[in-house]
Figure 1 (spheres, rainbow, N blue to C red):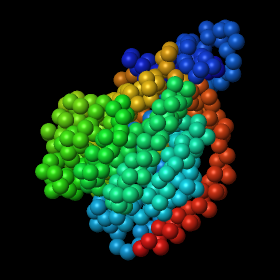
Figure 2: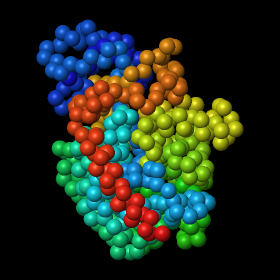
Figure 3: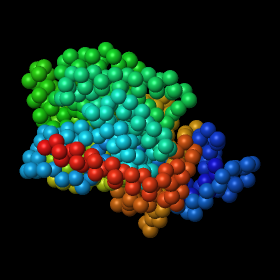
Figure 4: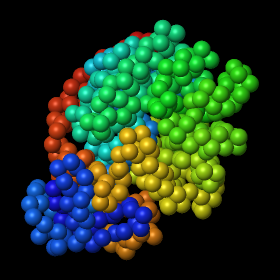
Length: 449
């Protein structure tokens, strides 16, 4: 493939912005040449040609923590009084909705999220799944949707004791079955990755944590929520005499291949444990605001060496919307307009997220337009009317980039959306079927009250 006449945002070590640039991609989906379009046009047998017509060509977005299964919560009302705090949100919304999911609902909730991801230029996602009444083979159902969509995803099943020990055992077995399957395919399939999913300390007993740790291979990390709400910290102290991250550290859940989501209420010692263990921590500002749980001290943790990434927790897969939320939320929360500058958000969303992918996708290189990197790319119809340079790029993304500007999405050198038209998915038919399925999900949800 030859992409020409593009304004290229490389996101490389020099943050180059190349005018009238071109990129050549080989049959393996790897970027092999970058340079001026007019010079690359003379390259023998360039293959398919895409004319960017002056639009921006840049790496695809990465989401470090999401929940495909939450798709069917959109527009759904919660019976009775509105939840008064995050624990009630879990009990009244999520822990009833996840029980309403069956195989079909798991499949279509994944597909509609993946359609959204492709439209928003999000090309790699780290999903965290729960469906207590459909555990066995649930990760195969999601992976089927992922492969059909053409994007990349890391998958896991949320192990929890809240539905009983038998369900916890099923969750452990599902993680292990999928991990073993992916390990067999990892040399030939770089579209999927596997982690060992755990819900959160507050729904995990010592017995289940020990079982999970003993079962999980040493070269596979965990994906778990931690200290999203202060109740998680108090529950851990009451159970173990330790704070959440200290408890996870005791059971060797931390490590350079593990992801912790949120970390809103962790203390200094917990920050140091995360940093020293090389554990990844993900920030989801829209979710934190929606659940009114507070915001983590991102800037301080980054300064302490924490590898902070950016996720969305199941909100829309527009990662630029997450950039904007982070930029504004921390200013308001701290009553200080100097907080959370755009370059800090870029460090999480671009640099740390791509390092996360390389670590957990068997060395896969994405997130840069550079020779040797995989071609996970997007073409964006953003026409800046002020100067765009490496120093103000992050601020252009905050204040200029918007939903709907992505018109072409390419993953592994293959076009999966061109001019807003899907190459691999029938968007209209999927939305039609997903809506039918949603009526049954909502009925099961409301019948549970």
